[in-house]
Structures are given as structure tokens and as C-alpha cells.
Image (cartoon, rainbow, N blue to C red; front, side):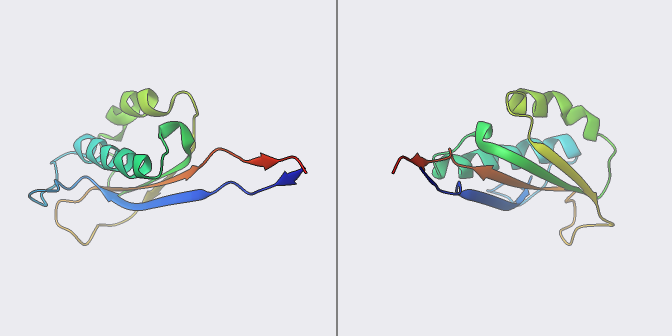
Length: 114
């Protein structure tokens, strides 16, 4: 039996910026919701879904309001419960930015019988 390592996809620098205007929603929830929506689109372009996500890294400049994201995260990731990392930084370079997300996903594992 041959074993192939599953393909890992890393989607980095997901922010809550509006694609049309470049403006950020005023709160952490709005930015995380938009960043996750953008991430799901990018995952889909690789044939993956939220079920393939194994790690989520949140980079935040403040934690106020982050708990309001828990129902959203539960709806999206409840089936797979990916590992989660929360990193705090002083500030982002872009004015108004409060959050950035990185998603790590793995495609279904392939095995061959030799």
C-alpha cells in the first residue's frame, strides 16, 4: 500500500476589507465574517470546503468583540473543529484593520494499493 501525503493548502492574509471599496467593517465580527467568506471562496477554487480546514489562525489587534464570532465559527467549523491559534499584535499597517485570518486545509487523503 502506497501512502501519499495529503495536499496542504494555506490561504493567508484574509482580511475583512470590502473588495470594491477597500474599506474595513468597523468591528471584529464584520471583518472576520468577510475574511471567512473570502476564504471559503478561495477554498472552493481548490475543490475544498470548511470541512477540509485543519487549522485557523486569527491575528487580532484587539480581542474586544471576538466572542461575538463564536456562533459564526461554530456554524462553519462545528463538524471538524480545526485547531485554532489566536495571535495578538499591536496594530496592522492598514488603518481600520482589526483582524486577519489564515486557513490551513488538507485535501482528502489518497491511498493506493500496490
